[in-house]
Length: 79
Image 1: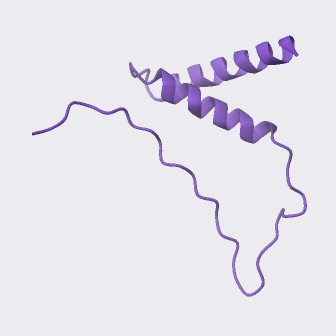
Image 2: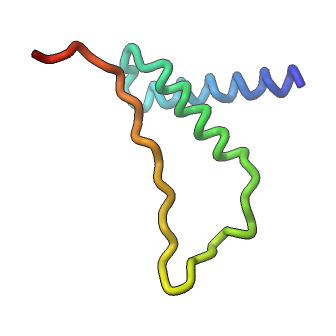
Image 3: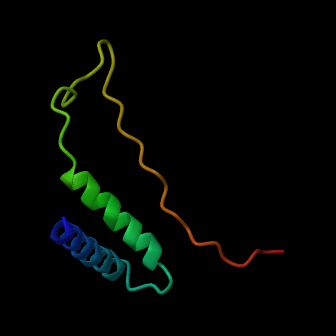
């Protein structure tokens, strides 16, 4: 299990670095990038729910899943 945990850590680290680069290397966003990387990898590795795949409610359309808004670091309070 230790190797699997190490592999996941390295995958999250690499993904967070790519996100950081894609955003222009902003300082102070490491936690946000790490959490986004963890989320993306979790979604990619989660088993697909085949029973709900492509299912559309009767008489309606499939609702798109809502994503959480990106976290923003609090800045100095304006007065």
